[in-house]
Length: 51
Image: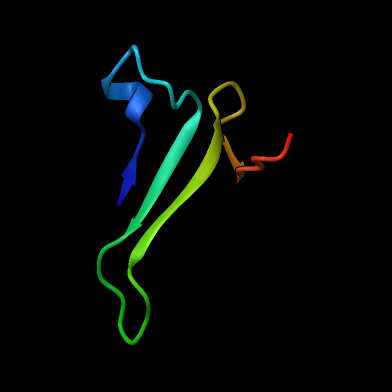
């Protein structure tokens, strides 16, 4: 499932962040991954927290 907090909450601190929730996967791990979402180009990139 995909979730963007800034889509639902205009005052969100997580601007341009897309969460991918793995809720069901055969023989795999469940969890959440945060990615960078560029609205202008409609592209998704790895979220680099060090820059």
